[in-house]
Image (cartoon, rainbow, N blue to C red; front, side):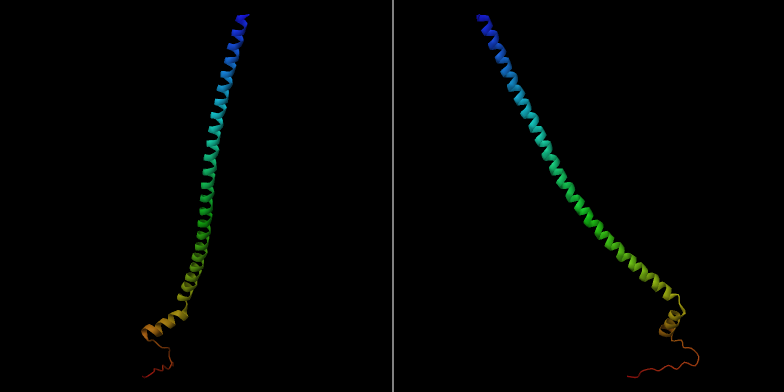
Length: 110
């Protein structure tokens, strides 16, 4: 009967060691999972910041695009005006001093 008690004690000791090892393994795995979760949360937060910054930049670029399109429209209007006869006459009068026939020029005296 002595033998049976020793073998039972050996089995209980082995079982206890296995339980301790299993708990240690579970704690290690839980720790790794918690660390991965923390890393994912931090990375997710940084990605949200990048998304917000890109959205703001996109809105700024959209506004700048609208301003440039308006400016392009103004330049095209000016270009059309500069190709008209009215503009040519105006510049000829101002820069060169040309006048049409039967046109009277009045000059101010100081």
